[in-house]
Image (tube, rainbow, N blue to C red; front, top):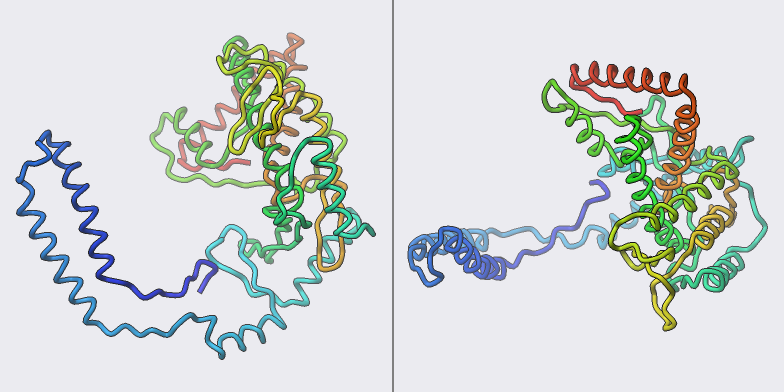
Length: 402
């Protein structure tokens, strides 16, 4: 029984049969339309009658079976008592890379690994004496005063810090995560993620232009293994990719120093706004980014009436990202931690923050090399070498992305 387990529910076979009959009429009309028949054509009537007859037979057969109704498992007194006893000694946590399973971890060991991560010499976190309630109230007020971002009542709490078991490691490891799906900075992260995604889209367009004129690729961000598989398949002269393995950095998120990250964000935001403004894209109307519930747009000015959409210029959007990095708090029991280095695992715009940090460093390195004749020659040889390595990998139909 894994985390996707659900108690079986009693099936209403008559209701199920009625649902099938209702959909059958729509299917018949669709089929007639596909075969270019009139909607009142009766050519499918014998088929309909036969299908409904078989359906009735199956429904009567299933209704005659006496299914055992044990009731909800967790309402069983014995099951609840045993589960509570197990929770006194163990922690049930999901397994990394195997979300359909969970690991049973000794509670003492679970607490030990948390403390080891938090209090190690090079920890990304520091303990703060500020009370959780005071932190939440301060952030709620500052987000509204500075950025007109309203924090929903249900999200007015700090993120919890936990770890999941990495059973594919030997010995087993731990992935530390901040549960930021419902916390005081959740709305901030959602807005920041939409804005960063939009700006990166213009950087990608800019890099595509540079690639057409110079032959050098400045943009190396890949969304996921499916995206990598698609890109590799385009260049594959040996057939379709059969296998792809993605490997990642074990501590990238909590190792990025804030100083260089803020420098990269500044170049990304300022440059992204400039690229968006200079673009010939028909939706670009000004230097103000409007971020709504699910998408962004560009406008010439902020509306005077109150709206749930938030508006940013380059400076204010950069200030939003700077504020986010300065106010990452997590809670472990009664202990409140402030993240001083890196970005938390679990935040909405975490991948974009890491992507921007790496992309800007790569972009600047390539741009610097392109200023000299020797640098251009080196880049051409380097990318030819990568193409050769890719060809070798494709020949073995196994790709590993590092």
